[in-house]
Length: 156
Length: 287
Image (cartoon, rainbow over all chains, first blue to last red; front, side, top):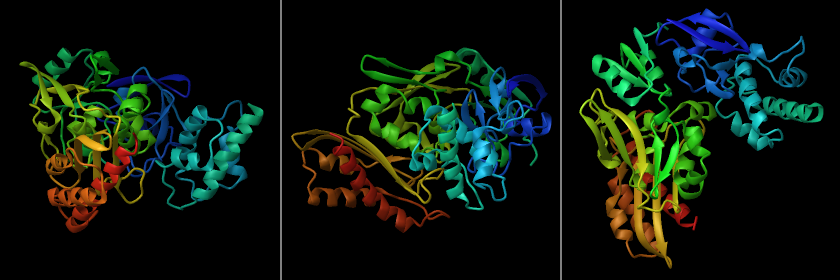
């Protein structure tokens, strides 16, 4: 079956099977491999994308359910050749070890900063609590989100 | 992993169409948030040939009040429930539980009806709704029926729903005030976790005396259960240490847990008592 949706602002169509997940559709049908698949049971958060602006674990979203809806992945963050402040902050603070969890972390953080531009460290931990980092590099990840939040407040 | 062999995905626009789509195909399943069903299909526990997506049926989405009762549509997301002003002011136990259901991502996907229909004895929303005397409205080929939530589950993963029936609305009748209600669980990592034991409590107090009490326990029996012995005992009593000790004993006695990878039966029984006492106090202190 064919599903038509918007991905990173562009209208796309993908040939899917009825039970295919959005994560599989993004990776195998649309070639967007920035979204990572790991646990495939909705526990690790590495496949987090924004569906109509809200973070979801795309391994559990039926791709068919996204018809006519808007999906944002890590590939959609940079614009006009410049990285998003979250990406800049993760690079600047070396908030990356193996890197596998980072796209999911960044997408959850992006949605969170749109709701609350000035979170406390405790609030950042809470909003990232659905994202696991098996390198356990949480401290720098939290610092990077806080730095990005500050950059985004200062430079709008 | 191989994709499950599901050959059809249908998107009805009304409850009637959904019931029809389920009636036509004996191996059809309702899908809403997908957070349990997608896992079940991938792990091979369920093999629906047709998925019936109810998330585009407008009458199943949203929260409304009617004659003092609160009606929550089956396809309403947990996140929407968490942010609803009436839920926040009147039913704090639902907020406690919704915040613990999965993580933020799951709350944006999962529905209240899905959490109930999955019928896990550890389901987050079941206890809070039980202590609020909630009922569910169900539509099927032979019409509509209303089922008290306490009669909805028959065992782990099992409900009284007939194959072509769908849960349409969760009704909180408002006969039990939810203002003094709370929910907590014993868990390991707090977020994206499954309860080792959970408890929900609703109380009504007058001058320090219990007028009405509802206590539920999760993950200690084949379904979420009420501790009616403790509820009856609390009637007319103040929450003294002696009374709380007795509630703890009665809750522990009501628990009939199993030992599994997450916890032993002995631990679960002990924690059932501790948690019922703790959540009772938490609920009472919200006054």
